[in-house]
Length: 519
Image (cartoon, rainbow, N blue to C red):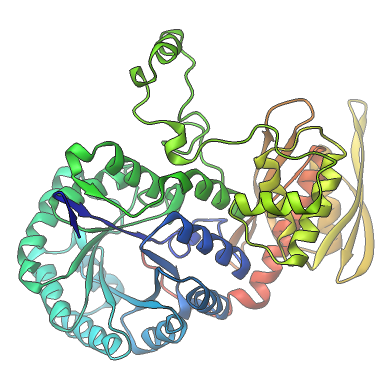
């Protein structure tokens, strides 16, 4: 697609697959669906919905997204073997635009130590598995894992082979974030020359951020001829994460003079997408994060403030409004009705059923009795904490503490409908509350990260708490999140939220554990 010599760049979003591999970012099916709906509103071209062979839960999530989300390509990841590929097909076949995304490593280090294959064996496997995938679905993407550290001639032979076998997209990942922008430009340029004879092949890149160069390498690849980039919202993903969707899209938009490229992204949905991901996973972006960070459009230095007041373009290369960072200041109050609340949810991008709306509305009324001004961020928090399946429900928490007494907490918890209670001491009130809950649920998960921040920093603001727990036996870390005007209550609720997620994970989301992650 060309528009006045501007080429179209496809945005392949892998937040729900590679992004979910970020520690603590596991999502249940409803959370994945909610985020997929927002990604569709954002305007991404492809949603990689998951890795169907990984678990029954992942399979069902991909299947549900494929069945519901229209107008977007829905991809399922598969290793280059028949079992994986058929499982991916079985999930994505319900999509309006299904994609099987199969991968295998091509670097000598992976061939020798991981795959234990010769180059010839690898070549045959890649070609045959693309043919197998093609027998089910027209749109097949092939990824050469660790492509950048592969021998270029051998990599190009594999690429040419999978194209002949029917691959419609070829992806060149910098799996370990080893490339630099100039190197990656030359690398993609050379590959592009070799596959130009392949017709309308999509040349894609997937760059990791281990050296902080994920976005830079992706943009270099676009200059070199790539016409698809794989990325995630907020740059989440394995290790240091992936190239950030919002950074790539903003750079292409602001610097059209350099990249001469456009995307189908609705820029005004960028900030909302970032916020929704944060609320689902509990993983916040750092304040100075480009585009979506709290300080991305803040000006503190006097010289900067003076310049912006006189002319915004002195220090702003884009407006906050471009990426959807405008909010109604005072949104709702204690006298607001359910209809207004429902309309607000819709305006914020939430599509909830009647039961979910009722539950969130009860939370809203409780909050409105405690604070005068209810902001968009408050509504996000209400939805986040009311939108989970619950085995455990916190009914009561009371803490005695001070500088002359040891903190003591008493809690009551509904466990499968049965009321249980216990008490415990701790190093502080939050620690005491968590210890008491641990005694009731008999959890082996340990808190490894704790974060609290204020929603709209006034004295009556809600405390927004994220708690990450780790279960070493299951080799999983999960983040729970909640908000309340009382920090101890918010912390207890966040911990219970994490334990509920861990229960769901243990019950039905991760039944298959012998998987290999790609990224």
